[in-house]
Every structure is written in structure tokens, then in C-alpha cells.
Amino acid sequence: MIVTPNGFRKGLTVWFTGLSGSGKTTLSSSVHDVLLARGFRVELLDGDDLRNHLNRDLGFSRRDRDENVRRIGFVAELLARNGILVLVSAIAPYRNAREEVRRRIGNFMEVHVNAPLEVCEKRDPKGLYRRARAGEIQGFTGIHDPYEAPLDPEVRCNTHQESVQRSTDKMIAAITKYLGSSAPRFAKIG
Amino acid sequence: MIVTPNGFRKGLTVWFTGLSGSGKTTLSSSVHDVLLARGFRVELLDGDDLRNHLNRDLGFSRRDRDENVRRIGFVAELLARNGILVLVSAIAPYRNAREEVRRRIGNFMEVHVNAPLEVCEKRDPKGLYRRARAGEIQGFTGIHDPYEAPLDPEVRCNTHQESVQRSTDKMIAAITKYLGSSAPRFAKIG
Image (tube, rainbow over the protein chains, first blue to last red):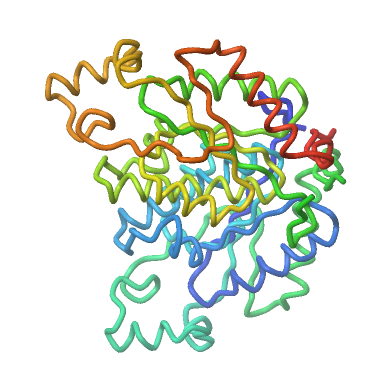
């Protein structure tokens, strides 16, 4: 059980990383809904969404991608240290940037939302792969830019092989185990 | 009593605005300590500090200052909607930017930390006025750039006339009154 300087239990940041189309949004939303229904204080930070607000000045160069991850990590840390369970859904393609966030935040769980590139490209929920292949988008992760898969993530969900329900169950089990005996401390009040 | 979509009570954002040297850091830290001692979940966002993290790409043009305020507002909103009491200490010199944040967040209390420019310049805790007068700093609020004082702030603390203790007491009274019957809901758990 980790207690912050101000006496609250430290939260947990669960970072869903993976290619576009790997299922990050679907899985993180599903996990969010279950945690909310169980009474946890939980916040979902969606990388795409944050690019319309906090990070709207950032592009997709390596430097901007790293800054994107750093800022999301900073916000996650603020929430987590106030006892909020934070779910982040963001590609975060570079291993170093993810490791920097992990070191900074402390209570960090990395989830590799994994599916082969061919599968992600076939799903193409937002039509981004098609546009990237047509040259309408530059620097697209998996096509032009690298995706550095986690080497040793806390959880890996192979979304081409397991259902959303199965992945969600795995995540809830992992999170509950991680929080351990302090889990009830996160339960909502009032 | 305001309940957010996820069922938590909405927090409150208290924004301390004022010239450099007006006493924002001193007062907000004092209020923070009292609230913490009373068991509130409270977070203090310091504008200077955030410029080393979240906003390190931003300068002091009007555009950058407004973006600075917007980002701080965004983070405050995330914390507040999870039931955290948020104190912000940041100059936020432009009225429009402050009003935009107020409209966006909803539960917003504006505090004018007020002292005449001459007093602030005489205090000059960080030596910034001296450097601004010497031409070493450009675009300094109050010297080169405007400070648009709040027209109708929820609280005004005239720090050249009242003690830190007196200002703190006023703030605690205002915050307690604002939260009203929902105040206990913000009390820490565990």
C-alpha cells in the first residue's frame, strides 16, 4: 500500500499502448465501464481526445510524440497521486518515452494491446491506414514510423485472438491484484 | 450539490490571479495547507511550476499566455470532476482567458490577489521586476504587458492591507460556503 506525502493512497496508471486499430479505445473503454460500475474513481485519458485539447499544438514527429506522452504522463500523475485510477489509451510508440513515464509516475502498469499490423490495417476503424497508404498522412505509426512493442508489459492482450470480454476480464484481474488490499480505498465516497 | 455524470460530486477550482509579487504563491500555499489539514482532497497547480513541465514550450506572448491558462484549466477540470479541490496559482493576465476557463469548468471561484504594482515591484521576491526594468525580461506583466484585473471576483484579497492569515481565513470561509452541504463529500477516505 503506497501512501503519498499528502496521506492519500497513490493511484495507479494503466497505459494501453499499441498500434492504431489494435483495440486500445475499445478495451480501455470497456475496462473503464467495469471499474466505474464497481465504484472506483477512474478517469480515462484518450490520446486522440487530448490532441484536441491539451496537445493540440503537437504533431507526429518523434519529438512531438514524446512530448505528447510526457504531458499525458504528467496529467496521469496528478490524478493518480490524488487516488484516481487512471487509464490511458495512447499509441506511445517509443519505448524510452513509456519508460520515462513509468519511472516518473511509479505506480504504472503497461498493457500491450496487440494485434499484427495486417489485422489492424484490415480493421482500419478510422480509415487512417488507407489514407496513410495513399500518402495523405505522413509519419503514420506502423507504416512510416516505428512502433516499439513493449518487451515486458504487465499485461498483453492479443486482440486478434481473444474477445474484448476476455481481455477486459484479464485487465480487471490484473488491476485488482495490483491494488491488492488497498483496493477498497479507491472506492467512491458519498 | 453538483453531481457529475459518473456520480461523483463535482470539485471546485479556485483560481488565484494577480500580478507577480502580489502574494499568489504565499496565499495559495497557506490555503492548501489548511484544506489538507482539514482532510480535503486538494491539489495546488502552480503556474510557474507547470511552465517547467506541462507548458515548457510556451513563452509569454498573448497567444502563449492564453494557451497556458487553457491547459491549466483543462487539467483543473480533470481533477475537479473527480472530486478534487483544485487551487491554481497563476497570473492569467487576460480576462477573456479566465472567463473561458470559468465557462468551461463550471465550478469556479476567482480570487484576485491584489496589491498595487508599486508594492509588488518593491517586494520583487524573485527579482523579476528588477530584471524587467533592466530590459533583461520582455513582455513582463505590469511593466510591458497588461494585467486585466477581475471586475467581479468571488473574493478579493488586498495583500498590502491584510495579513496572510486574514486572507487565508477569508478564503477558507468562501470555499466552505461554496461547497455548502456537499463539503463533507470531499473529505478524504481511508
